Image (tube, each protein chain N blue to C red):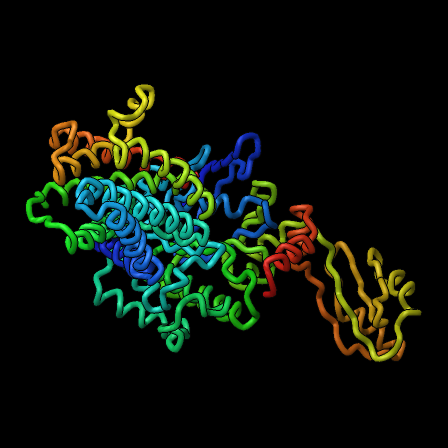
Amino acid sequence: MKAWIAFWNILKKDIKNYYLKPPNISWGIIFPLSWTLMQVIRSPDGNILNLLPGLISMSVLFGTTSMLAVTITFERSGRSFERLLLAPISLGTMVLAKIAGTILFGIFNAFVPVIFTSFFINLSAINWTIVFFAVLMISITSALMGLLIAVSAEQVFEAQTLSNFFRFPMLFLCGLFVPITSLPVFLRPLSYILPLTYGTDILNGAFVGTNTLPPLLCFGILLIFAVSLFLICRHCINKKWIL
Amino acid sequence: MVMVSVKNLKKTYGKFTAVDDISFEIQKGEIFGFLGPNGAGKTSTINMMIGLSRPTAGEITVDGIDVRKQTKKAQSIMGIVPDESNLYNEMDGFNNLCFCAALYGMRKKEREAKALELLELFKLKDAGKRPFKAYSKGMRRKLTIAAAHIHSPQVLFLDEPTTGIDVESSRQIREMIVDLKKQGTTVFLTTHYIEEAERICDRIAFIANGHIVALGTVPKLMGSISHGHGIHFLTDKNAESFATELETCFKGTKVTIQPDHSLVMVAEQRIPLFPVIAFFQDRGIDVFEAREIRPSLEDVFVKLTGIESSVLKKDAEKVGPK
């Protein structure tokens, strides 16, 4: 019960202090909206459905990784993060509480393009349960990657630089806009070691039926990624921040 | 009853040894001071004691709980005030306290009641709804101490609690620390203010270059250095011309003239007071004041650590006015 009280209050504090701030709300709306609008203008004939999985994935990826990396680095530089490290809650509970807010922010980001495109195309045939769980898994893995960046960075600008260092290559390697089968052969193995590849594949299947792997396998792989990243993050925090 | 026990504690960073084989115990309800200059190993020690840093060697127990093995259990009975006031800038005083209470699993009603009580106690009630970033340094410090006390910890760790804040706030914080002790809280504090340690600590450890150089109560520390007995005489007339005669009359004494023309007599043995007063009266000199000269804690610190007290004062100045 005590752990739950701490978890809930860390989550509530992060949502209030960071995610509900006007700049972040506007980022969460404007970024996915502008990308979607760009694609709608570019593909007025309805091909937008093909691009929707990419837009959703990208919105989640950018929203989650940047938010968690920046907020944690910010709290660390002000030393308020020490309060969480010194609280009588397990490191696992603390990590879960910190990523929970980011995951919710990621899900919010994901559905901005969906809501916007729903005004232009018919989305009634989509299996929303699969889409929701795919978005959830992409959010979890992206948030944990953001946490890994936060562990590696000392300053906010370092966190931002590091985020971009791996986010942009991911856009091209995960089949978001270019199918993995169209990538040069030597780059393809790289695609399969990135969690976003599997999330995008599930979304491709749910929206346009162009998935290359069975959704269940993708969910399984994403779960393995999530657990592994969680354990790595917990280990890194324990090793790097408790000297 | 021993509340905190530290045995053979050591911390190295590569080849640098920050804390070198220190041992001490803190009794329940005691205020224990750790006095030393910057870089002496104070923060390294406190960080190991609160579980924010892993010792290279040694044992730490708090109320019998092994801090290394049961860190979270030990942290549940600790209150921690770091050397920087690290509450959340965006949140107001009341919500900062409530959040800190929630980290210790306190329920909403309980934490709100306690937060209001502490705001009142720490004279911050009017500032309770102001964001932390709008607080003065002294107020920030007080709220940080209140936050550390929100779950009524058995042991309170304070790292430089009064560094960089104004005189009035420092005085209030010292009073608060003494009040917490009266309520039964054990206090471990680090400081580089000698007067602060002398004023509020039951026992003090001098730390220099990672070693505990001396440890004890203020009288015990005072007695740990050999010093002569001295008496300062303030007279109505200039008694300078009698200095040599005094030394002759009272064998084994040394008389020095002070800039204000008063006299200081120093001897290895205690100096009998009335014969000296009679000596002055026989020569038509009235004695207005005869005061025993004792070494200050500062003298003891300088003698035992070899560090000039000015180093401590400079450290304090670096972080701001007291």
